[in-house]
Length: 251
Image 1 (tube, rainbow, N blue to C red):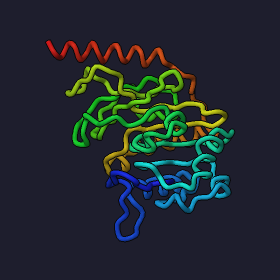
Image 2: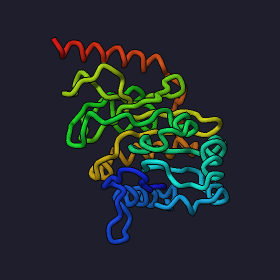
Image 3: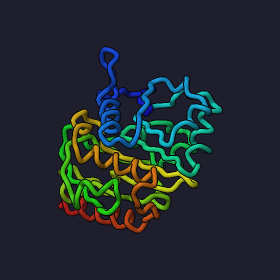
Image 4: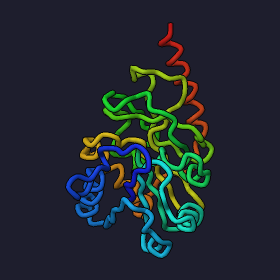
């Protein structure tokens, strides 16, 4: 679990008195309570080697900026390791605010940060499109949550399977475009999950949020089935709906 910040540093990944950060602690405890995985946490990617990466099944980022990997390690991680069968990459919240100008990264992830009009104290409504997927199943068909919500550029709906989106009709601040909240994709023979939620520390103690990430890990490890087929038609429909909701609010 990489929680290094080369840009803005979130409270959820801030270590105090050399203790694990709230996000690191939540994932470490989840691994112990589920008895499914062990988490190693780092805030210094310069020490990561290619041989070290080969010891892991999943890499999780809660990061910002251009991380100082050794160039050959960075190339291996995003262009080789992440595409290998049995490997998974999980991007959480500001993982999308990482490597804005490094195309292999945002091609792997599916999109990058382009602002957050919905701030951390705003309660929003999220629609679940695939309630059967292990990532989205804990949330039901729809839910409210208070958290910072990102919008995206370099968005690739033709390559991702959108699981959840912001419901513009039920959110006070409306924008005329689709805002995905969580998606999955195949990346070569590997698997990728991006979970946009996770800015606030209290989100990390939300049981549904934890079960959602656990579901993603089980999916990546082949323990549970989940659809990753691209659904660009859903993104197009959500785009049209958001524009309609926005236009209606202007009248």
